[in-house]
Image: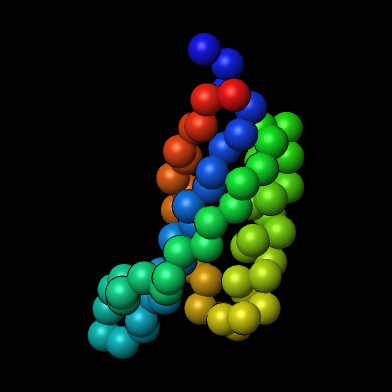
Length: 70
């Protein structure tokens, strides 16, 4: 079965720095539907957008793919 569209669920955590680093609750997810060919570009754009919205807070970006059948 061929898959043409990836739905990317991007989760971003704030890193809290104190005596030690810990991961806080996640920021609400961002969903993008993109072609497989533009997946990396979409992730890069999402990261840039999130870094602009949450300056200095984007330390980890986890990508969870949900492949939708063509």
